Length: 115
Image (cartoon, rainbow, N blue to C red; front, top):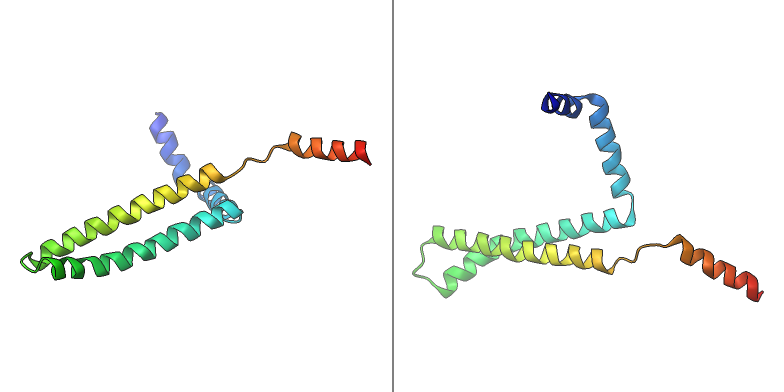
């Protein structure tokens, strides 16, 4: 019963509109735009590595069949890109400083006392 209610909710036009609005709101933030840029940059990096690595593997080991070199190149490109993407996103999360409203108020209060 619960699963049918959930699937009906997912398919409803109102729910889809809410999801689009949520995505628009998240991309309009600095963090959302930064995350999108990071994902796009690493996607392009993955495409380039996927194109270059099989050729390099064939150059280093010419006895490997071309199909096998493409599989290894694609696997290595995915691993490199995935690791870099995860490390960058985690670093972004760690480096982000949460805003604390009481910190802003305390500095304003200190200024009023001094002034």
